[in-house]
Image (cartoon, rainbow, N blue to C red):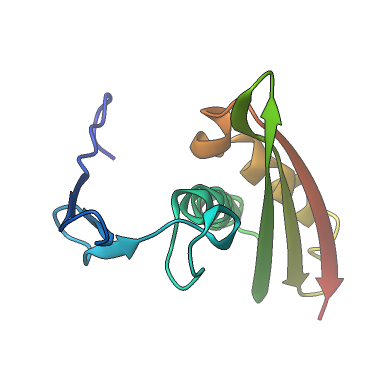
Length: 144
């Protein structure tokens, strides 16, 4: 890992008032975005609202993988779903909370350690640690 601080660079470009916003960064492919259905969009593209929710989901999952590897937790499957709630508080729109639903499949003998590793993944997520929204983890461990 590189020393801190880390810097991440993203830019956007749009062609005309009716054009999609295109997010660019060196490395990954460009990503066209548009408003979500709730704000008059078609829902066919990623929006800032779905991107931030995806960032929470991705951060949790990548954090879990790193912690599980460091802890030598054996596991076979992780399904994560995140619901972000956007609300209006004191005339400001903001995400008030995120619910992270994680279902983890582990072999017999690993089920006692698995919940703590899921909790630790939620605790170390740099995305949720950077937001004011509450985060609720709902985890389920399956032996299989």
